[in-house]
Amino acid sequence: MTGPAATFGFRDVDPAEKPRLVRGVFDRVASRYDLMNDLMSGGVHRLWKDAAAARLNPQPGETIVDCAGGTGDMARRFARMARRAQERRGGPDASVIVVDYNAEMIAAGRERGGEPEIVWAVGDAQRLPLPDASANAYVISFGIRNVTDISAALAEARRVLKPGGRFLCLEFSRPATEALRKAYDAYSFKVIPRIGEWVAGDRDSYQYLVESIRRFPDQKAFMGLIEKAGFSRAGYTNFTGGVAALHHGWAI
Image (cartoon, rainbow, N blue to C red; front, side, top):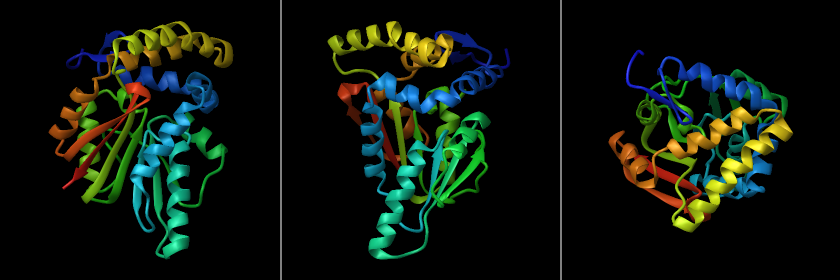
């Protein structure tokens, strides 16, 4: 093992091995990823993403990094919102850079078509192919729990942001009440892998995704990691009782 163990679902694995394992998961699910999100959440993920995009409030001329942006679901929201703001007030075009480690996910996003503001790139959240202080905003949605070193990814987010840049992370989190946690666990472990098997023909990948949520730090612990990475005014907003949370910070 090359260093402290990394998590892959409920397993501890060699950090050098995790990227290959995660890439295999998303290679298998890429073609059905958006459909499965709708089925697993009953469409509620769209409301969470809409709320995250509204909080970001993209503006004309901004450079926005959509890290682990996959099929471009969030990037399309950002591009449309920036264009509407541009139509009202004028200004230069925004640029939304989708960076994802998985080429299959990027390919699935390209096939869906994209807004003219979107640029697609295959890249690692821990080593972004971007200059220092080059972005106005950085967003990562349902992706940071899949990186090998969360702290390294947060440090990269801080590196690429300009002074005053906004950081947002939308991620599954810890339900706020014991009753909701029990109900969510029952649904996650009994239903989601079964849906994955029926729809995508891949139970194991969705078993991993469920397990990875349970291994991810809770809201307060993750907020501490954001602060340690150098972000100011860190905080979070729970969605659906804490099933998901939107974390934020500022590069000041």
